[in-house]
Length: 207
Image (cartoon, rainbow, N blue to C red):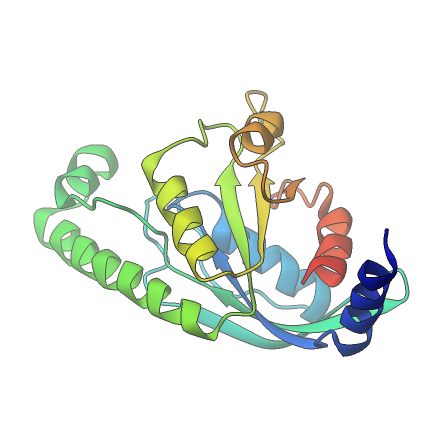
């Protein structure tokens, strides 16, 4: 590391913000609200939202302020924002065929889910960093993930990819690392809490 690199690193450490707004983003059912609940339960003793197997359970952004995370003698206070799932296509028929909802309920959920996607994108203007959640049991190289990452990179937002659901046998965090090598990837199970301390340590250091 050269002299100027050392100076820049030193200055960054001195002037690093200690209060940040971080958004939890990702496709539907990747585990965004499960992760948000895990973080806030661990640090402030309460949960942020409801979890459901039906996609787009979170249709409005929910914010929890003043979540102080500590790791290895350092701490950062985060305002955590759990955002609606990002999707490139929302079809009300899927709620009927796959989840047994009636037509009226399906149409309403599809409408609210579409509005939720727009709301999530608008929130990006307020973010200091992003926790991008991916289901590590699914192929990460899909249109939704590519669209989200492209949007975040265009805004030059720091992105920390959370490879969730590593408690599943078919989980493969290495596939996510291979697909998006330009961003750090932390494998966790938000459901069981596995490796969350590593995520907290990385959040404090990275953002």
